[in-house]
Length: 280
Image (cartoon, rainbow, N blue to C red; front, side, top):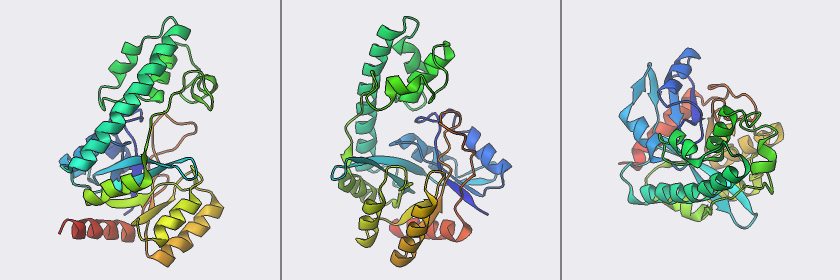
C-alpha cells in the first residue's frame, strides 16, 4: 500500500497538529506517512516515538532548507530516518529556528504598526508546538481578527509577497552544508519538488554526482514536462522515486489533500532498506 512522504503540521507551518495526520492517512488507505516539518527535530522525534498510529507506519523525517547561491534559489531536501541524536542535525534545526524567529518577530513588530489590533504575542502563542514563528502564523492572527482574507490570498501579497512591506527572509545554509548534515545524520536525502524553485539544473548535477538518494517526482507542483525528465534522470542514476502531497492543511494557496501524491510500495521498501543499511 502507498505512502505520503511529504506533509507538514503545527511543528512548522501546517495548520493541523501531528496526531491528526495519521487519521487522515488511514482514511484514504495509506500504509505509510512521513511528517516532514521544515528544519524540525519535532517531526523526527514524533516519527520515532509513534512508529504506528491508526495502522499507519510513520517514517521519521524533516524537510531541510538550503540555498543555491549560484542560481539564487531556495532548495528543499527531504531527510528520512535521520539519527535523532545527531549533533549536526540538531544544531542545524536550532540555527534555522533562531533565524526564522528573528525575522518573523521583526515582521510581527511591523504588523503591529500597521494593524492596531494585531499583537506579536498572539502569534507567539500559536507557535508553541514547534517553537518557531512562520509567515503563516502571523497571517493566521490577521485572519482570526478579521484583518485578512486568507492565509495566502490578496492580503498576503503586499505584506509578504515579493518586495512585501513586512517581508524579511532568514539566511539559509548552502546546499553542500545541508547535504553534509544529512550524511552525518545517516539519513536518506531526497530532493523535494524540483519544479517549485526551478531547480532542474541543480537536481541533475546532484544526481549525476551521486549526492542524493532520490527525487520527489510525484508532487502537486512538479510540471508534467519536468516529471518526464526527472523519471529519466532517476532511472539513469538508480535513484529512489518518491511522492508526497506537501500537505499544509488550510495553510496553502490551493487545496492539497493528504495522500493526493503517493510513494509506491517498491520505493517504500527500498527507502527503508537504505535507511537500515546506513545505520549498520
